[in-house]
Image 1: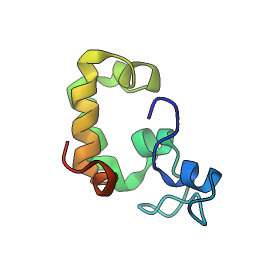
Image 2: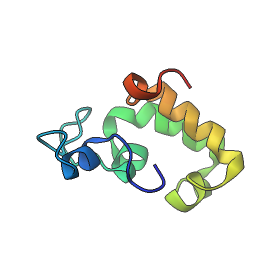
Image 3: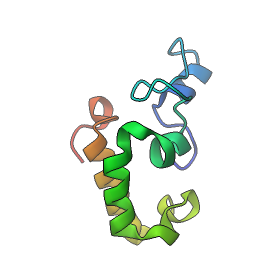
Image 4: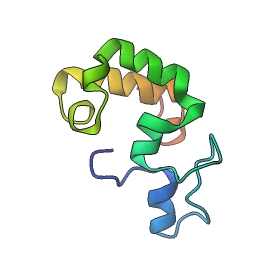
Length: 91
């Protein structure tokens, strides 16, 4: 997730593994890491739970993807969305 080389549609499209960069969850925007973590309406409930756990000031890529104490909450978000479950399994 930090490098943007996550198995999300935008990256997979860039490396020619899928036909479209569009998010399969909301079907409105390219599924980048930023979109997945901070914008996709399909994950709003899980994102709100993440925000309550880490605090509003930590809801940014610089904090969420690098601060050790926040990673467990980030992993819980990834697990709860089930978006990467087919690759990562249960976290």
